[in-house]
Image (cartoon, rainbow, N blue to C red):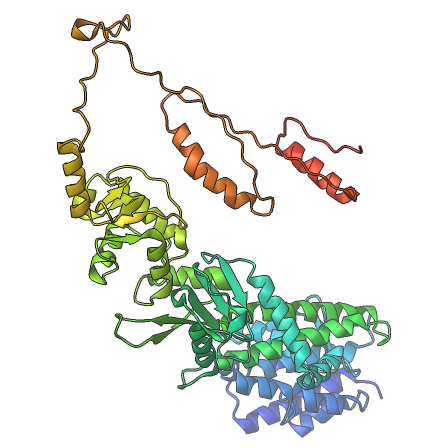
Amino acid sequence: MKFQRTRGVLRLMAAVIHSLWEKGDRNPLILPSTVPIDDARVQSELTRYLSDNWAPIIEKDVDGPNSLPLKIDAEQPNLGKLHATRRVARTIYLGSAPTTAAAHRGIEDRRVKLGCVMPGESPAVFGDALRRLASEATYLYQDGPRFWYATQPTVIQLAKDRAEQLNRDPDKVAKELDDRLRADLRKTGDFSRIHPLPRSGADVPDDLDARLVVLPAEQSYSKEPGSAAETAARTILESRGNTPRLYRNTLVFLAADKVRLQDLDEAVRRFLAWESILAEQVPLNLDPHQVRQAETQKQAADGAVTARLPETYQWLLVPGQANPQAPITWQAIRLSAGDALAPRASKRLRSDESLVTSLGSTILRKHLDDVPLWRGDHVAVKQLVEDFARYLYLPRLAGPEVLVQAIRDGVALLTWQSETFAYAESHDEGAARYRGLRGGQVVSLSAESAGLLVKPDLAQRQMDSETAKPSPGESPAAPMPRVDVATGVGIGADAGKPPGPPQPKRFHGTVTLDPTRVGRDSSRIAEEVIAHLVGLVGATVTVTLEIEAEIPSGAPDNVVRAVTENSRTLHFKSQGFERQ
């Protein structure tokens, strides 16, 4: 039976208008989206010239009482108030069902919107409805901007079935999520290290630098008391394996939101389903269009996982303590989506002053006095580094170097007597004095230095007493000889006195470094030797690095190539491998 254009249109429009009049429809226009396909009389006119296969398609994907468009509209209020998904489905069906055998099937998305939008409505709402419908419908095909219904199911249903089957294989979903988390956590932000997905406290070292611990997905966070994330974080904070944890003020924790985790799990399963379909496109006998559709859907699913990962891992759990006598408290901070996980966490902690990357020397002095952190009249640098890593009532430092820099700044401060502290190399208990006492000077030290911070009033008294009178057995210092600046010859009473011993004018030194710790050793040499020489006025300092390697089994080609190319890039004056 062929469609009779004039008579067929009159019959169809009579049924449409009668149905709309019965329903009290007040729309100013009759568009494809307003044709009541759910009315039996209208549906009969639309399908009487088509194959019988279309009836179940309309029931499932277009306008049945339990159809997918009605379900989407019910779940999305912004779409449901306009029945946007239902109207989009009607428009696509009316525009594509009669032309399924044509060379260019379907209608473009802009024409779909044109067939839906009434005056005063936003086209963007219908674009959203179209995207959602295309990602879930069983019989709706897409090729670029064109959409059409067909009687053969798309691979979408196959993807749904495979995603559902992955509920019975949680290990595969967990592995994909772990891989994505670890890839994201390569960006560390202000943390020196990240500990991803530890299974116990034994997996988190007890070190002095600040680190982010990212809890596994099953240890998610909710605001209910005793959440799995808070319990796991508390266990890791208290112990490392079977031993108590010492440096508790170095850890903060990142956990997944319990509700959002379900959405992330669904997105991961959908991605894995599309990935498996593309991997089996030959056994599944997919045509080129279905392959393109699967690639498009896989890309969309991948984007959904990428977007939902930071939305899910949004809770920072930060331990704290108001004072030494107060109990440990936990603060849950919700992060906003945006950057990678670790940089986003460190940025929020910095803004809340829960992670300190730069400490003022006067602030350090305040903590020394208020807690107090002094051990008598002084405190060792190593002890102070451990105190800040250990006690939760002190600022959480990004690493020991933050404290060391604050000490350097404080000792170099010109007003150290009133605002900061002095520095000494050691304390002679027998003589009750400090060796190498300095204040108002630049000092070179590291977190491993054996030096001491000294209370400024005590340091000032020792300096004054040592300046006021010489030590027993010493003669008063002789006056400095006067020398003519132009000729260099002594004048006056000093002319006949012999000059003192000449000062050394050259220095040379050779040291063997541990090849596995070159960075650490060279850094110490730079701070404790080279820095003193470079600071001398007019000094010319040359540092040469000599490398010699004996390789009994011979160097492989890839190592030879890498070392040679890197040596040239780094401007080695001479370099080369020898065969004998």
